[in-house]
Length: 322
Image 1 (cartoon, rainbow, N blue to C red):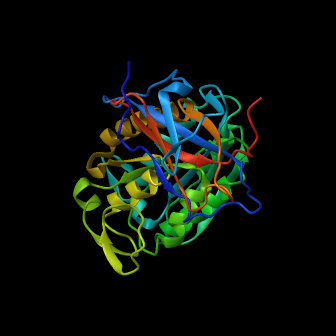
Image 2 (image 1 turned 30 degrees about the horizontal axis):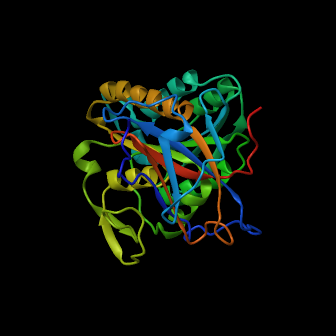
Image 3 (image 1 turned 60 degrees about the vertical axis):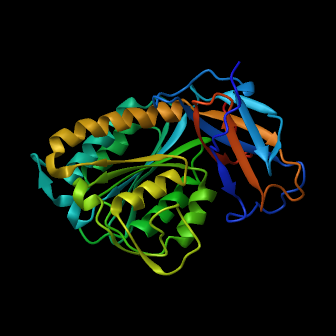
């Protein structure tokens, strides 16, 4: 018999994002989860009894459970095309490495999946709106050129707004950047929670630069997004990792001192992203709190002590797969 895991795998402070207007007691709430074992491998084919879901510390019965291995997904791609992405090493530029890993990612997707290509520098551009033909996305991808500065936070906010128009329930945003950024993350933190979109970040920097602190307004070095408002110091790696982990996704540094080697590691990260998108579980429960879960905490954990769960709130009103 598996013993109950005490590891807290998810606590969402829904009071930050608020509840949708018109939400009432008895509202169906939906969670999407990814489970990995102690070796970091995805755990598939679990059952409802393998999870414990709590609201304000009280166990909630799971009213619907689904393994999402075969449903179509919506994938947004956001690429940094600022001037620094033109820097070269190992025979290619950072932008070329980004384009290469996106091409590989597109080839790993399935028919019926939906794609969106965006880029940013000082401004933000939708290079190709949502469509199901990856070849059209790749044509737009090949036209990207570097220019301008880096306005990362505003670009992520704009990209998350676009992702709300995705037609599939499973949604992910892939962000590729050298991570040089500044600004106030207060509103962005709320948008990440509200977006119900996994974020995966590729940090293209040498490892030393990736961990050099830079001034970023309102961003605590540890602990994710906080309430502090003073200008604090953080690193590009911490910025991109926090963007990812607050969404339920993940981040990785790719050392651009040798981009030829880095591109191989980026392809492995592509494989991990696709595996996670196809290896999710959808769980639903009926919230018993008056007005829904706003201002309350949701906790999702596995009954197996060596399983780690990453989960996020999802919109139960989104169209279900046929």
